[in-house]
Amino acid sequence: MRLNLRWPSRAEDRFEKWIAQRHQERVLAGETTPQGPCPGEDFLQKLARKSKGIRLSDPRVDHAATCPACMRRLLTMRREHQSRRQKIIFATAVATWVVIAAVITVARHELQKHSLATNSAVVSETVNLWDAGAFRGQQPGQLQSVTLPAARVRLTIVMPRFSSPGQYVVAVTHGPDGSGLISEAVATTTNSGQQETLSVTLDLRHAHAGQYYLSTTNEQDQASYYYPLQIR
Image (cartoon, rainbow, N blue to C red; front, top):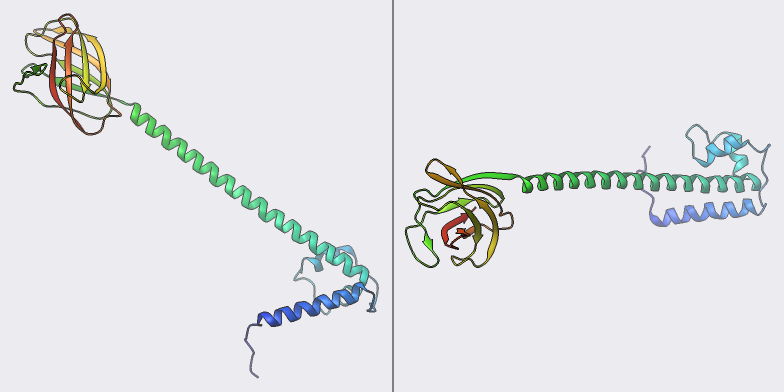
């Protein structure tokens, strides 16, 4: 005996569907004669759900397939069952998307918090200009190169030898003439032995890596001194 493992074609599927449709029309039109009493609601519910617990040899199946009243009830139950399944699938899909959206939102929020915390962190740096050469205005000289990160910097400056005490404006600019201001702060020197020091906070987070100038300006005599600055 040879087994026919060929899958039915679409034409065959359409033909079988047409036959089933024609049978339903005949039953609903009262053109068939059912045998036996109508089965209960529980049985029709199981039949509508295509329960595997129902055997096709059960006489109630034959009755439901030929009884107009049972057929109408069976078709209604099947539509209700399919509608419930669709609602469950839709609700599950919505719940899944809500969970995914919540996870993405929480992850993005945590990433933003981490990024904000990183960007808001203050980095402490010390620049020792005690023995540094500088130039005043456009006057050239032997210059010490200074390196600072692109961050919020709590900068301590050891002022050059013989610097006058008092209030200074500390600035980071693009040019050696004070043009292209990036950040500035005002502070008063603190004396430590023979050295004068300044402590300021400069916001360099938006500065791109490259060449800049760090300047100190004494507010009393308006003397500005510039030092090459490399922001990394």
